[in-house]
Image 1 (cartoon, helix red, strand yellow):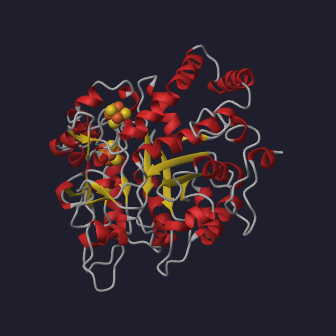
Image 2 (image 1 turned 180 degrees about the horizontal axis):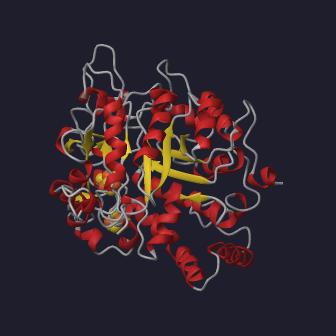
Image 3 (image 1 turned 30 degrees about the vertical axis):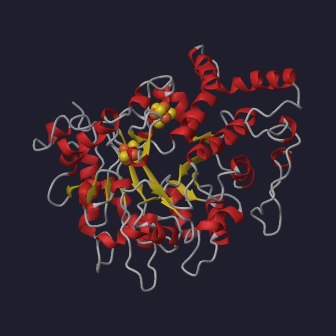
Length: 475
Ligand code: SF4
Ligand code: SF4
């Protein structure tokens, strides 16, 4: 028996029926951040730990790394850092974390380090360290300057684009693997293709992830919520919780989220299959093989707990609120908390609370009702608990389903999914350039996702320069 296969055999006090692996997100500086994005309700979580400086101690870091490695029965373990802003912990902290991983890593275990950052503090020292230890760095960018700077602002309400681009340049200089994490919000929701092209052509991104911004509020909290989640002079700070069926003005529209993804898809499927990896597209393709890469579209969830700086473990990063506190790793081993009946119930509720509309939905196998945090709308029959994004999710999965089906068949027959691009090119040729575009914009194909699409009206990496078109950038 390998040491990594049975934690309960090595540590008899640990539950034998715990999950073989899980993806814990650690927040070493809690929700503290060095910028002040207007939509970031995580900022409000500082209210959970008032009067404390949120910094993970040596003892908590040691307990976290040791317990995480002890808990895994699968050989691959991810050590994932995020925030708030983890660079606030300084580089020495992470150097020590890597040493601890080496100290506690069991024979046969391999560890992937991931690090989600706003990029502001990244420099040569950070990036040399990331490269040396093969970190995968997630960089938060919401698109070209004008779109990014709408909500991703500093404490003086100034856009952060230039500073983030300095961080991106440092990542590039050191050839660090990076993934772009882009929120889809009210400012960029109508610009999917331009946002995607910016990442691909200007930032050279190979991995891209889109996250919908949905900030819930009630009749009582909506006015304050619309102001943002940071400290407001003279006003009592709100603690964001997943309650209310209203959304702030910054939130993406339900249907528009799907339209945004379709806009990206129609570009990707013509040029980039096998070259650029967009998380939601990978998730959709893998579902054909019964694999669920992302909790949001898996039948059940509960394998993505969040660890606060002081050792408190919560059910999920989106439910860091008192009701979902599982316990503290200084008092109870994290595997016991992750395998606890409460956490199991949390994860199974995702499947057990599906509305009748979801249960009979044609795209259920891909969508699985989406994330429970977003289920605050009414279904078509008036049943509560429908996903706010449902109109967009349904639109997206119905739109892309046939193409991913072709890709899945190609894979099953031993071909590359990228071969689908030849089929799409042949279809485009056959149907001609002046038909309505497949994305549903109502524009002619040639001037939308075809070869005469207008250049982006947004600024790129170089101040004042418009983003080049994809074809120009690649030539
Ligand atoms: S609540 Fe949502 S984000 Fe959290 S684990 Fe479940 S599906 Fe994932
Ligand atoms: S598309 Fe809508 S109805 Fe279908 S599974 Fe998803 S949330 Fe449910």
